[in-house]
Length: 319
Image 1 (cartoon, one colour):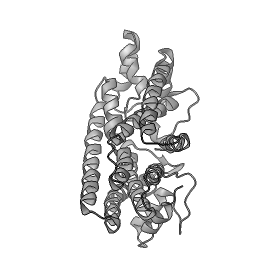
Image 2 (image 1 turned 120 degrees about the horizontal axis):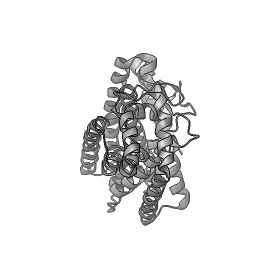
Image 3 (image 1 turned 120 degrees about the vertical axis):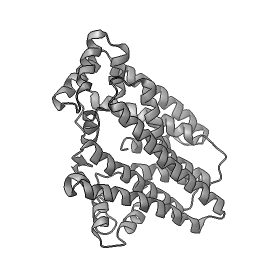
Image 4 (image 1 turned 180 degrees about the vertical axis):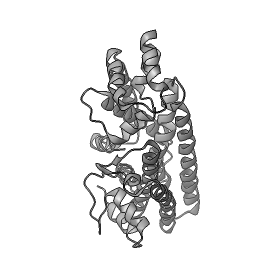
């Protein structure tokens, strides 16, 4: 798989300008088509899996997957600036290496380039109505993600976040991006299935919870992006469940930690200890498995094999 990576590399090798050099740095792409093994291109690979499943021609598949990787990169770069993440893909994050102003500009460039690439599929479509539907889906999805990001940032300053709030962000911020990877191949294939919204929703809720659980487990490494998120006061599901099931003392303790403008890194072990004490990590695992079961049923309805489903889950873990 990852047949789209040479297309992506070619797009970024068009101009010998600093902007594209920084874009290639983010992806770990060197001269030519080689890529750094630390970058897994998860969104593009998931899109490619759906394109193959619905028999989308290789040229369109490569364009769609490349476009979505560019769009995902835009959000990654901006997220690193926002959360102060100093690492991404086991190397210095773009803003840490080149400064926040350059990183913001590169992130904007990624989004503009992603849209221009998706427009290129017009040469291979029989009906321009399909292209208009894809562009409409593309643009409304970006707006929806920005709206959800605004909501998530508001939640950081609220003393209590509910499970409903958490699920809303997982569905509308993370699930919307994944929904593009699923819906665009369905539109081109003229599939009558409307399962993509539910598949994306269930997949991303499952994966978001799984990543939270991994981070808050005792032996979990301090992944830079996830660590930056919690220091910025994003509340993982096991933390939210402390507010919902803890006693007055436990709620006060976690509440005091989240009252700080930015969470002290030294207090992260205290957060983990509270999650273990109240068994909220196990509660979260149970919830995640329920969403995985729902996802499997929807993928079965579309005729995905077990091996294809495993590939989707494997790539999802890198998002």
